[in-house]
Image (cartoon, rainbow, N blue to C red; front, side, top):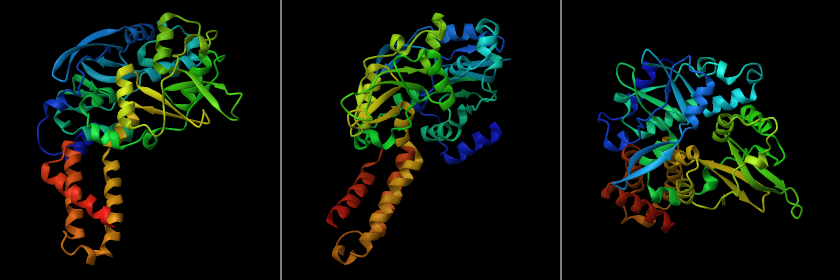
Length: 369
């Protein structure tokens, strides 16, 4: 599917309004760019460097320190590739790194190309970007102008700064979105082994666990090693064949419970400036991972359709008891109001007062059954 078709599909799904300030703020203009012949060693160094930026938080300027999670490869001012932390991990785990020094490998050799991009004129809806993230399994979406020149980039982190509906996140649990396909390692595993596990399983981290002698089949999570860590270790020139997980892992861990709200997970990530958290239950017999990307799933239109289906099932049951509610609005009228309210929420992320009243009516009808 070419880029023009992708842009047109997005436009067809959105209204004709222009890019709003809130959407503008989801585009990070500070993008690390490199040429195709830039060495991997140079790319790693640039991605590992801490930069400072000033952004608005609750209307007040706030200085943050951040590292680039990717490098956009430009040729003649056009986007031709992208090199992410995952690409660095894949290179680290490959035989190529044993045959050639990172200083001798141009980024052209390992970059992902072609790159999915989105024209700014087509960027009118946060949900459209989440759709692209999910469909193409990407975490970085370069935004370009009509001439296909780079403007900025949208990531789960930048979207999370725009979408802050606390009530929605407070109503959902970590268990709703967490992944239980956790890749584990031991404290004595060398980092190269961990990098290979990340590459083989296409995951962004390995959870370091220890056996619990008191609880059978329990894995006590004691640390974590991430893609970003691998990039840092490469930048520092560590011997990944000898350095063990226990020497470099992030520890101790802040653990979530599956019953915690997504709002708690969101706030914990923001406070600790991390992109993922480990979930543990039953004294380590159960392990999960929740990430920035998984938290954003609650805003996915597919999730909204699930809500509609659930309401449809409940309201179908109400039809059989319609004689008990003659003085109330009909089931069909209430359901139409609910669908309209959710459709509006998909566009604007906020409900009007009238739509809230219709949702409240639906909930009252459900409680009466």
